[in-house]
Picture 1: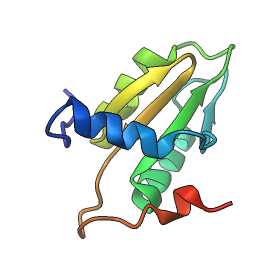
Picture 2: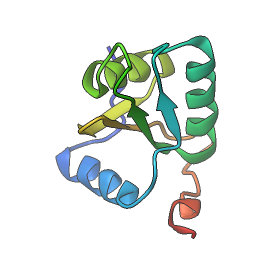
Picture 3: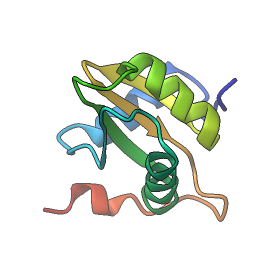
Picture 4: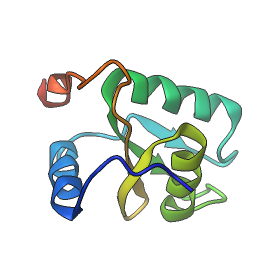
Length: 105
């Protein structure tokens, strides 16, 4: 089962709000969840804490199933899905992360 880092629905909604307007940092294509996709997602979560992942039309898994699988394999929390996009959260081990880069243009 995937980790649960948030305390309640309001906290999850707040985190989803931080991702609003942000582009997905990773796209999963026809090959599905490959080792390189997992490595890229791991790197992105380590750097940002909050990420969006787009599951392409040709992807063998949808955003719901793919998001759950990513969350389990990366010890992250699936905040939700919208269409073909999954939103993942994993706090940094060294304390609260700086998510200010999410709002830079």
